[in-house]
Length: 184
Image (cartoon, rainbow, N blue to C red; front, side, top):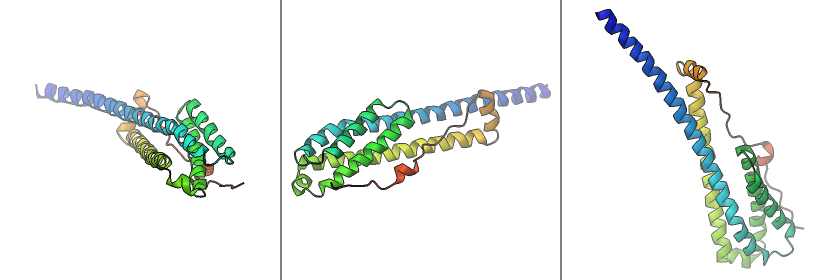
């Protein structure tokens, strides 16, 4: 009779392990998907602020059409991007273009003092912080997921259930470069 109890306990522990690890990987995968959605939300919010920023800048910077066009094109690229890698790349291009506008604004004291411009600049700065945090949260989720699937016993269950390794969001070398500001 004791042998049946021990055998039953072992079977229950093994079955419970299957459920626990399956649910663990599902939870981590959902966390990663949610963090990707949060990145998209923040990139969309940033994109939605751009028209207001451009309208407040246009009156002051009539001869800076090239930079305004760069921001507009970068926003269009972000709005049309498919997949997180394309969105992140387009978001980085938009961020670089916005840095150019803010740097040029230094040459226009009236613009720097414009409350609408200042408000939009502060909102964009806050969104940039949120985008950075969302990227960090995404990569933290990837780390937890990959560690779980590469350590014992998680690796056995991950392979059994077909959970594949996921990649981190990476910043390319060109995205790390300081933007070139050209006052033509």
